[in-house]
Length: 325
Ligand code: CP
Image (cartoon, rainbow, N blue to C red; front, side):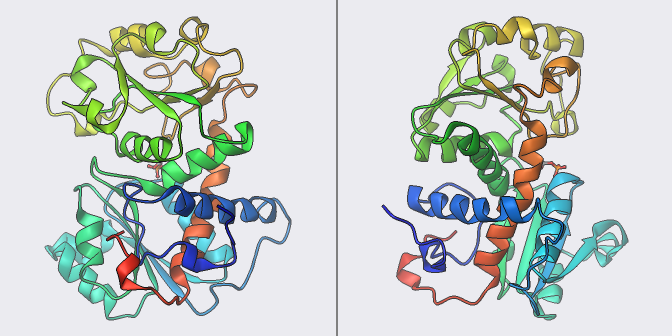
């Protein structure tokens, strides 16, 4: 299918709450639009006026460096007014609920709300209460759609196409919204996904998502094109999932020995923030012949510009085509 990247009706949804349910041509459209911003972001003058007069509110209930900063940069580079709501200094600290906060912000007529929240489904709930577009910046263990899009853009620029690639997603899959969004996106675009982790960090029945599961790094990494490492999310662990960090690194930390079984040019990815010496060896993370971790961050700004542009401008939306996204 040929995609007209100037025709925003190619993404016929009010929100971006997840990757699940998106069609391949809708994902390709967002990636193609993102691509057009990569060069612009490398120029001295990075500013456009596409979203002049529009208001974007970043509402982050969890810490973030990459996602919050890149949404802010993306909005500003498109000429929008961007407000970062600090939960620490907001009325949420006085007990205001998510819904009341959303209704309050809605009364100020924002055009896009970007939300990160520790609870799965929070972004969807919010989208049902406000009049503007909502983009999820990550909700609980559910999804982190713009992370999967920026990962896909990074891979596509290096490999040309996602279809047919063998991608290994390794580590704390149980707590990872990044893994879930990437599984949906990679499967939709024709890649094959393997998950590699200790049994305790693999969700029950995850095979139903169309993935292969391995409990040994060297078995799972065999001939892979792409290795995506995941952060060990200790802040979401109420019990012990492995004996010690030292043992975890020994069996599941990415080092040159484990990498030796992948394709020789396999790309190394990590969404950040990284725990060096826990899920990834420092030398491997900084091996810029193979590690594209910094490129992922760069692509994050381009992807978020595309998403803000598509969702922040007024569009005719045919309700019969909206699949609750
Ligand atoms: N990858 C990612 O979501 O990073 P932040 O938590 O810094 O936003």
